[in-house]
Length: 196
Image (cartoon, rainbow, N blue to C red; front, side, top):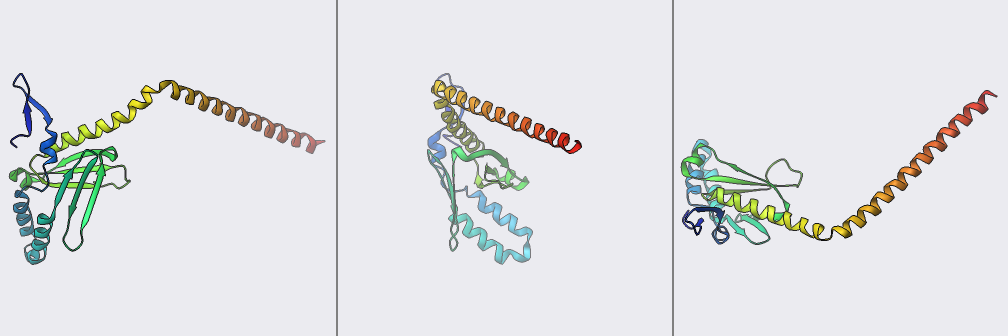
């Protein structure tokens, strides 16, 4: 946790995580291996199968935080890698069970607009989970705020586009009214000619 928060000039704690500290996180904390061992004890007869899987997962898991996004990779025989740009992040959740809290760990669940109900990426074995969450939120908001700035800067151009769109919609509405009136007149004309 050392170096995670910077002291301000007045000596108060700055709650924004140091970007360099977050960028330095590359592997899960070693307490994750303890968690894996304890969780495999729950399925005691399957320990010879589950424990090697967790061992390979723990030793091959890597994280990478860049200026554009975050990536996570793991696996020896079947390598898996997930890369998410900060602009795609929709929501971030923290989750930890009783054993994870006892070990000081939590999982950071990153959700995107991919359409799946679960998290796109789960960062496991982090002791700096709140700092990582705050870092991801700040990056996510920063990307979205930058996306809105050009529209505000070119408001005259966008208002011209809005005027064109409004004129086109008015034209479509006028044509629909005329079509409805023509269909009504045709239906009324058919009824009159049928009675004569």
